[in-house]
Each structure stands twice: as C-alpha cells, then as structure tokens.
Length: 589
Image (cartoon, rainbow, N blue to C red; front, top):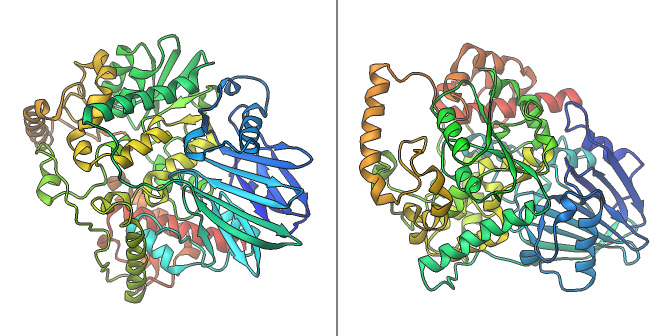
C-alpha cells in the first residue's frame, strides 16, 4: 500500500498523512511522518517484507513497490527483518556502485534524504510503472506517488487542467508529462531527481537520466535474444521465490500467465485464481491450464455490476487520470486471501513489450488477425482529434501535447514511435492502473516488467517481435505441459504462428457461426461485458449519481445531457469517472 508525500516546506504533523489516508475508502494503512530542516515526509507502510523506511542520523530512505535486487539475495522478502532490503539498497548506494537499471528490477520508486547535506534524491523506475508527481512553486517543491493526494497537500485541488480531462476522456490517458492539475507534472521515467532543500527552498535542482529505450540490437540472432529473454524471465522469478514455499498466480485462458506458470519452480505450492462474471470459456481453459501445471484453481465470481460498483474506491485509490476499470482485483482480492501470499504473479505487459500489441497495423489485419503480422513504421498517434461534443481549441491543444511527446520519442524509436508512445513512460498505457491497484493491495510481481526484459524489448528489431516470434521461441519450453490446451481464442500457444494460421481460420469461422446461431451465448472474456453494462439502465443511472460532475467546461453541454452515443464504450466510462472526480472534488472542498 506504500505511498509517499514530500514537501520542502515543513508541514504540521499529520498534514501530509491525512492526505494519504484520503485515498482509501476503508482501512487506511499505517502512515508515518518525518520532519527536519530538509522538509516534511509522510510514508504509508510498504506491504512487501523487508522494505520499510530506514532512518539513521544521516539518511532516510523510502522504497515504494518491491524492486527485486540483483546484487544480493532477496530472502528478506520472507524474513522478519522489516528493513533488510531497504538497508541493502542504502548500503549499495553509499558504496557508489549502484546502477539503477541493473541492481533493481521491476517497478519501484526510491527516495533518499541525506539529512546532513539536506540533499534529496528521487529515483523513478525504467518505465515509470510507478508514477511520481511533482509540484514546484516559488522555489518550493512537493513530490508524491498519488496525484490527488499531492494536489491536496500543495493546495492545487481547485486548479484543474481541462485539457487533460478532455485528453483522458477521448484518449484513455493524460499525455505525459501533464496531469489532472495545471501545475502538477509527472516526473520522467528512468531518472534521478536531485536537489538541496534549505529553509523550504529548492537549490541545485538536477535531473539525470540513467536509461533510455534506444534500439541498439546487440544480439547475433533471434535465437540468441530468445535465450536471453527466457533467462531474464526465469531469473526474475527465481530471485523472487528463492525463500518461498507457496505463491499465487493470476491466471487466464491466454498464454502470458501460462508462460509464468511454466517457469515457477517445481518445489513451490501454487494456487491460481481467475475473476469472472460467470464460468465461461476463459475459466474452463484456465482450469485445464492450472491442472496441467499442478496448481490449485479457484474461480472468484463477481457481481454483474462489479465494474460500476468499484468506481468510487478504485478511482480514489489510483488517482485521477488513470482508468479505474483496470482495478480488476480491488473488490475481490480478500475473497481469495491474496494479501496472505508472499508473492502473487501475473503475466502483465508481455503483449506490449514482446508481441507488438501496441504497434500500428493495417485495418485489414486488425479484422483478419490470422494473417501474417506486419507493422507500419508510420505513427498514427498524432492524428488530429475531432469531436463535436468537445471544445475545438481544447482538441488542438491536446494534439499539440501528443506531438511534443512524439518528437521526444523519435530520437529513441525512429521506426516504432507508435507503440512506444504507449509504453515509455508506462503512464501512457491505459492499463497501467493494474499496477497502481495491485501493488497497494497485495505483493504483486510481474516478470515481464523486469529490467532485463525491458532492455531486450527495447533493443531488438520490431520484426523479431511480430507474430510472437521471440516470445514463442523463448517461452515454448514453458508451454510444454499445456501443449494440447488451446488459447482462449482457439489457437495453441505451444506452436508457432504459421502452424496456428489454419486453426485460427477454422475456429474464427465456427465461433462467428456459433454466435449468430445462438449456441454460443454470454461474454467469454475475463473482464466482463462493459459495453452491455455501460449502455444498460444501471449504467445510465450511474451518470445521474454525480450531479456536481455534470458541468464540465470543455463539454459542449452538461454531461447528463450529452449525446453519449457519440462516445465509445470506454469513452463513456472515462466520462463517468471524470464526473465522479468532479463531483467528489466539489463535495470534499
């Protein structure tokens, strides 16, 4: 559950911690305040073992998330010492040997305060999977891992950026580095921020980028890269589990979590969980996969209105400007006791980093996915926005922000700007809120977000990632136990793309016939039928629950009177979330 708020201006005791408490609808975590002539800091308890704040006469270090350490053992994850991992990071830093892109793997934020020198360092992870937000005014600074809490702590909660809200509704994210608030920005990924705090003022502010996603392929062949990829994923898993006896896996009927299942050490007791509205094709396949890998299997059923019911709690927890609909576990995680596991694994992000999930493809290929996959180097992210329900000048300003980000990415990714626009930083991906939720609720680990996987994905040619080529070659041994079990979409992960072409065609044909004939009924995916839900009578009534959110300046009319048929399903959900945010802000002011 760990978050922090820092202010170079000394605040009254409890001032910052009360802002962190506000993000929790129920049972806020233990929160500790620290003060000195360097400023004030509030930190909520880290749910990962061994990574609590460590305070000495000279240094105060805070770890957000659970970086896997590659320079030492990670047995602190199962030990009783609350600061063993934090101390290891501090000692590595003090030795001058630390390399943030090599020594710490996975999502993290590190805050180090040298109380004697009054020097503050804030280190963001390689992808900004855990975002850090920054407010600077009159040489004073505030930092935090929750944008709304930071806004409240720095008096910015009324200064809303209408351009950003429009961007969120139409594009699912707020373009980096902007936020919901006019004067708050996202800190950059893979960066060391350093400054001196003295008498509330900021001196010698610097930024040092320690890694960039430059495509510099150092592998002799696809096979060579696949070997390194397999080692990267299995190595991350082995480091996490080295002192563990039992772990959990969030499973699906797909192939990403299946690959992780095949790499979990044999000696572990393994439980797997899937969240569904009802037992469907996804669940039936996941149950077969769990059995093949010797895992206990549990289906956790949710109410049909789940993705509307979680709106308040999920929106508050992740903060404005991130899609609450990816908080898949927030109302269910206690039903399967996920906080009791030392590690809960998932298969998040494999598609984006290793399978060109976010790359631009032709319209034909999007409709006929069984075709040989190829991507175009021409980006489509800067296409001008047009929408009759929104202020035209606001749309122009959104376009300008997106072009600015594209121009920065072009120096790294000349032939893959389109997909890296959604990946660097990770806050540009609408699904990143999965990390924001899970890391605060239970000990979540995502092997495909390890530093070596990220580096391989950035380095290799786009062609190696097309058609699952590198992913399949690296993960094929992990698929062996489930080689006869199909993907939820009908094809078989154990086999290459070309073997699966006729299977995709045949399965696709019979499923289309099945839906039309009526013998395939109901939603067969994992995340519920949101189109039905938002367009239902229940969904329509949700818009009426937030009257104070109706009047939004960038809309052509009140939100309740808006012709929502002109919005996609996800845009309607984004609008509903924005209405809740505006309503909640007004009620709390």
